[in-house]
Amino acid sequence: MLEYISIGQIVNTHGLRGEVKVYPLTDDIRRFDRIDSVYIEENNDLIALDVTDVKYLKNMVIIKFENIDDAESAEKLRNRYIKVHRKDAVKLPEDTFLICDLIGLQVFTAAGVYLGNVADIIQTGSNDVFVVRSEDKEVLIPGLKSIFKNIDFESKKIIVELPEGLV
Image (cartoon, rainbow, N blue to C red; front, side, top):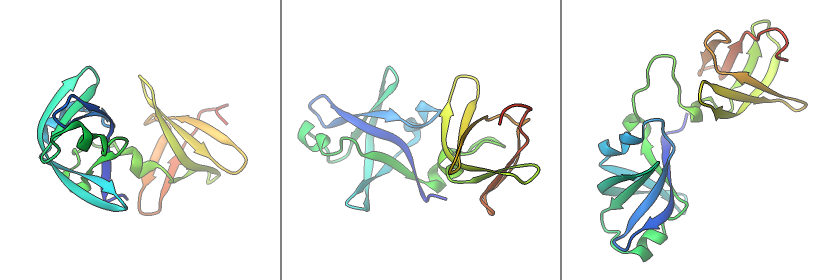
């Protein structure tokens, strides 16, 4: 499992005072209100940045970092991901998981048939859809409790019971 989790991507600068516009990668956009510091990757190292102000503009987050005081400094952060340590991540409800923890897990049917690995998870309005790929096929599996019987992070396996006709 990843030690640092991406919660947003800096997509642009905002104004002249060094603020950045962030596309949130979290279900709860207001989680940024509870952040004092974040990490940004730079040359394969993580750099800590203190957050001094957070505002919201439509579906985006505007963040001001300490010591980033002009648009030129903010521009250097463009396209970088904002990360938090796993211990600072939002506590999830039971039977809810971070997408980054599910990517790469092997998926098997209850009968033991290997379907592939989780390649992506598409977030739709009603339920997530797991994109499961093997060498020769791709299966789209609705993320429903009735289908997902077991998720075992230690063995890196997911057991599913697929409805008739899905595969």
